[in-house]
Length: 237
Image 1 (cartoon, one colour):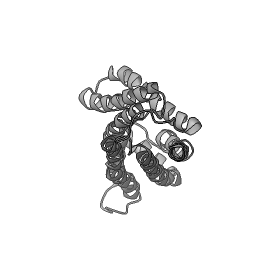
Image 2 (cartoon, one colour):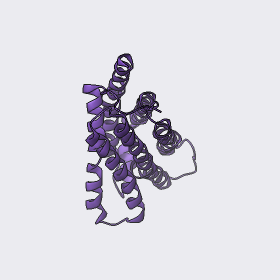
Image 3 (cartoon, helix red, strand yellow):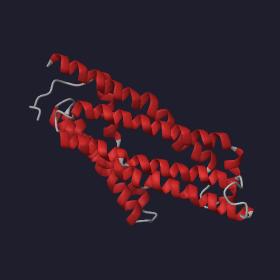
């Protein structure tokens, strides 16, 4: 039992380390810095000019996003290994929710790469400049909708909910962390659904509140990074 506890602590610390040191920096780069550098809402011309002026940064953001997401998948696989004895069905649901994002992320990054190629006149030489700019802006907008405000958040939320339930059942961390994970997952799912149903200005206030519910996820990973796991208090099955 003691050996298992030590092994689980090492595994959860490794998983949390992957998140904080290898997932967070690329996420900050490709979700905040690069869009502010390149993307101009409702302005295809400025967006296209910014993209061509910062082509290497844009290419690097595609690579870092894919690499960061694959590392995130590895992190979830490590947590799946630890929580599988607690409840194999919940642990599978947590894993499947993340694996379902793999084709989504790759497809939308193909959209981003295609937007760049269109501006460089490679796919369709018959496009004039205005058509190239409109097509590139459209593809980049689709990528932002899909990964940022669409299916990406939905599947993340569906991952956090079983993750929180596993924390509650296992006793590996304080119960409040499990509850916050469940609330965070519900917040992500609600954010995705409301963004689709209510495309209105007053949604901005609701969205800000929903995004704060993700604090539980950061606290859970911080706990696992510092403390590892506590002794399991319920029988495994």
